[in-house]
Length: 260
Figure 1 (cartoon, rainbow, N blue to C red):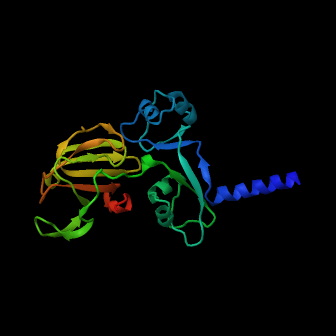
Figure 2 (cartoon, rainbow, N blue to C red; figure 1 turned 135 degrees about the horizontal axis):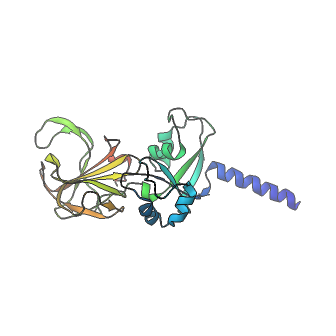
Figure 3 (cartoon, rainbow, N blue to C red; figure 1 turned 30 degrees about the vertical axis):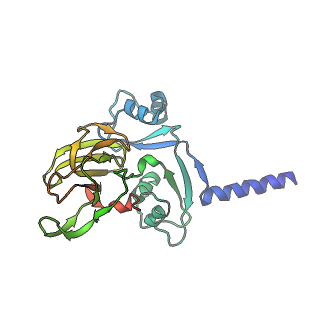
């Protein structure tokens, strides 16, 4: 009787894990970006340098290759397993679990997102560092949406590459995600502008700033103050222009951040 109960318990636990039970992840996968070093990665994840070297069988004197994937052993990353069902799409699964579909594709090594096989198990990694956060800590009020619109100054019908948020001059602007600053200065109609490069071929842009508080090449944590909002460049009033790009192409920020 006791053995039978044990077998039933094991069977139930197996079903829970396959259908989406919590995953005790054994580590995190880091995609090497320009400027990354083993020492910097070790400090970022608070994992001893020796463990990273051993887990990846690498020579510490050899330079890291951009795009290389490193296993960070012991890095605490919670997640679940999801089993693909009939009618599922990668974007649909990502939307239901509030993650980016590109991250699901990268983490699971999916070559063709349009051809998911029923029964395939997909790891959904709940790593807050991979999610985009709001660039402002004040209530978000959209003054101009993403997409085609008449330009407020030139009145020409053109594509708006980001979202404009109401923000009085001097409001703190925060890095939406951890990354490396690739541009910090004046850029045409953007005025004072900051661009941050993130893991997974993403960048974020912050325009019309009154002050810039970061420099090119600087590594910033998610939530770090990178500048103050303003009215520089081509602008009709104080606000923050915020954009997200994937491989250089703009995406609607509302697909990545939550706006009440």
